[in-house]
Amino acid sequence: MSIRYPSPLRPGDRVAVTSPSSGVAPDMQERLKVAIRAVEARGYEVVVGACMDGSGHLSAPAAERAAELTAMLTDPAIKAVVPPWGGETAIDLLPLLDWAGLCEAEPTWLVGFSDMSTVLTPLTLLTGWATVHGNNLMDTPYRVPEGLLSWLDLVTLPTGSRVAQTSPGRYRASGWADYRTSPEVDDYPLDGIGGWTRLDDDGDVEVEGRLIGGCIETLCNVAGTPYGDVSAFARAEAPEGLLVYVEAAGDDAFTICRNLHGMRLAGFFDAANAVLVGRTSARDTSSLTQQQAVLDALGPLGVPIIADVECGHVPPYLPLVNGARARVMHSTQCQELIQILD
Image (tube, rainbow, N blue to C red):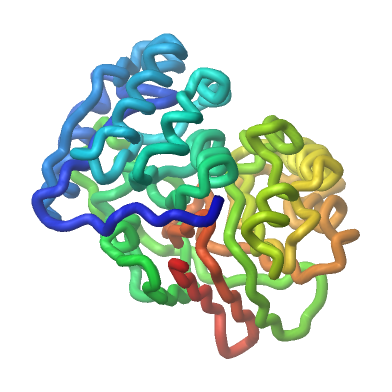
C-alpha cells in the first residue's frame, strides 16, 4: 500500500452529499441549499443522497449509511464526497463499510472534520487513500482568510502539488452563527487575536512528516484497534515519521487529558516527529487547562507540540490532507504548514 491521491476535481465533476453521522433538520434546510450553491458556483454538479434525515442524532440506520457512503466512494462518476457536518456516532459504520471494495476502487476525495474523523482517518490508514480534514459542507460558504485554503481548493490539486498555508493570526472568538436565522451567512468576524503556540518549549520548530490525525473525542475510541493502527501505517508509509494533529471538540480538560493518554498508550503518537493541536473553545477545569491537559498526556513524547493551529472547531479552517508529506515551521516570524501531495 502507498498513499493514493484522488483525481483533481474539474468543472463539471460530480460532488456527492451524504450524512454518515448526523443529518439535516428541517430548520437547517435553507443553510444546506446555500452550501450546495457554494459548491455549484465552482462549476460542480451536486447530488444529495438518501441518508440525510435530521430528526434524530443519526441520518439513517447504520447499514444504510454505510452502504450509501461506500456506493458514493466507489462510483467512478463521483469525484468527492462531503457531509453537511459531523455528529456523534459515525463509529458504528466502521465494521459495515466494504473495505475490500474500497481498497480495490480508485480513490475519491472524502472531506470533513469532527465526527467524520472516525471515517476519514481509518480510510487513509487502511486503504492509503488521501483524505481531507477540512471544513464540512455547511461551513463551505464562508470566505477564506488570507493565508488559508478551502477544501474546494485542495481537491483541485494534482498529485505532486506543493501547497503552503499560514496562520492568519486571528480567529473567531464569538461563537457560531445561527443558520436558522441567517442561512445565507458567508463571513464571520475574526475577533480573536492569536497565532500558534509552542507548548513544550520556546524554541523555533522546523520538522517534517506525513500528516495523520483528527478529532480527539472520536479517534480516542478507535486508537489501537484495527481501524486506528497509526503505528502500522507509519512503519509502512512513513519511515521518516509523522506529523500528528489532534483537536478537542468540546470535552473538558480532564476528559481530553484521559483521552490523549489513552491514545498515546495505544501507539497513536509513537512515530510522531511533532504534534499539532487545534485551537479549541472546550472548557478548562479549575485545576487543569486544555493546554496543560495536552502537555500532561503528550509531553513525555519529547517532540515539539504546537497548539492553537487552525485545524479544530474554532474557525477559520486550515484543511489538512491525511497521508500528505508536510513540513511545519514555527517561530516568531513564521507560522506555516507546507503540504506536498506525494
